[in-house]
Structures are given as structure tokens and as C-alpha cells.
Amino acid sequence: MENIKENLKYIIYWTIIFIVSISMIIYGIAKPIQFANFTSSTNINLSQGHKLMWSFYSYSLTYPIIIGVFEIIGGITLLFYRTRILGCILLTVILSNVIIQDFVYEVTALNSAIFYQVLVLIIIFFDFKKLKNILVELLKFQNKKKNLILLIIALCIALIIKYFETKIL
Image 1 (cartoon, rainbow, N blue to C red):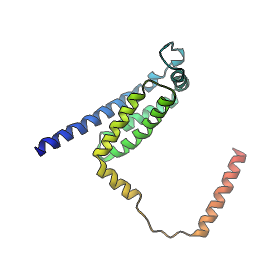
Image 2 (image 1 turned 60 degrees about the vertical axis):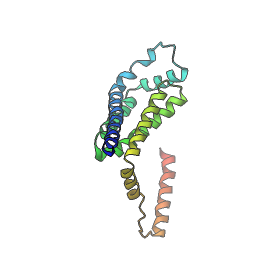
Image 3 (image 1 turned 180 degrees about the vertical axis):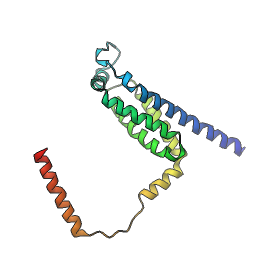
Image 4 (image 1 turned 90 degrees about the horizontal axis):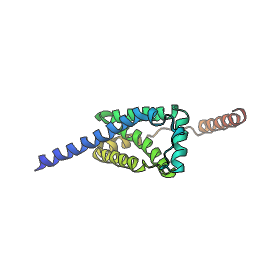
């Protein structure tokens, strides 16, 4: 019985990985086509916010292409054990942005973005031990002596540079 349960978990885990990975790679590849010439669209079923956001994305294809590249990278990194958590983090950043924009601009694809984000969270749940080990290592306390005077000097230099940055740039 235990073997059947483990096999079922394995099948579910990899099914979710393949769904998200394939979808993100396809979305990433399709980004330039998706937003090309949207300004000439006459679809009356779209909300004003949806039209506004898509017009913004279609103004220059550079931004959608960059997002598409990161979707492809996220989809590919999900396929490998060593990079799966990185892929989940990358896709969570992208999907969170998409979810917020779709919600604010009333884009009909909101449910799809939420669906993929839930699947990414399930992948993270399956790999929770690995994520926990990564977080423990990242947040591990390091007892390094700090020189307070040097920190104050560095802060003053940073404030001076910021001051000049606002005046020059």
C-alpha cells in the first residue's frame, strides 16, 4: 500500500511540474505574438483596463519579450531537481506580477495565473525540506564583528552620493 501511495505522489508531483513547465515555456515563446499589433484590436468583450494594459505591452515588444524569456527560464528550471526551487521563486515573482496586473486591469486571464501560482506552491510544498534547508542556510546567523565607525562613514558617503545623484540625474 505504501508503494502505491508513493507512486501516486510521484505521478502527481511530476504532472504538476510538466503542466507548469510546458505552459510557462509556451507562454514565454508566444509573448511577442501575443502583444503584437494589439492597438488595432476591435474585441468589444474586453474591459477598458484590459485594453489599456495590453496596449501598454504592445507599445514596445521589448518588455513582453523580457518577461517571456524569464517565463521560459522558469519553465526550464522546474524540470531539474537542482534548479527547481529557483524556478519556483522566479515563476512566483512573474506570476505575482501577472496576478496583480490582471486583477487591477480586469484581465480575463486572472484565473489562469492564479491556477499556475497554486501549482507552483504545490511544487514548493512537495520540495519543502529542500526549501527549508535553503532558507536555514540563507538566514543563518553569522557572528561577524562590525566596525561601527566604518559603518557610519559608509552611511555618510552613501547619503552624500544619493544627494548628488538627485541633483545630477
